[in-house]
Image (cartoon, rainbow, N blue to C red; front, side):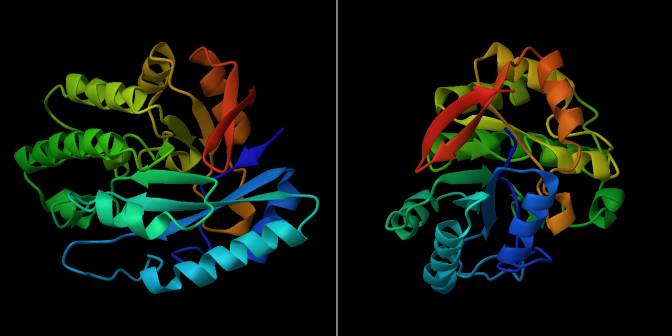
Length: 264
């Protein structure tokens, strides 16, 4: 079986419609496709062009659910990728509660007002001390995101490495504390294949953290983080090898927020 849950459409920053992503899944031999467009809600009401607007939730959900009802050869799962912002978990939970989501990905893209994965320019300009501060704050935010209980899957675990800027100090303890928080929250972690196509040329998470996730009994899901229909299963064979090398023998899928294991 092949599943792919981390996928974006024109509802956020993807380049394809829901129907085009389903066709991409069909061509790639994906039996179960999740749509997980970005959802970012801030305390000050900021809007981001790459995020689904709160007032569009009804229409978004209707479209994905209808696609699932009318598509016979691909199972379509309803999801979102929630952005973590401090203090917003309660409000987000209230907004999402009425909808029949199959899964929710919880991700950290911001430290303070800095978008850590938008472009390499700021990383180039930062002093190394500032890079170290951002990395340390990122791990703290990831722990906090897990502790909210909002998500089923933690997205792209070590995302700040995207542009190949790494801390100069050893923050392994902070990263492992984030894994402990994920395990404590009963969440899954993804091997996010998009990292292999970024400057870092490495999946999220790095192999060491995949092994540590397995050691903690954290369930695994392999995801493409696709923004185009042709990417819904990119590098999946490579990801399965990474998972197997870390000791995994199964991964998980979701239905109405219930985790279902199946062989790797």
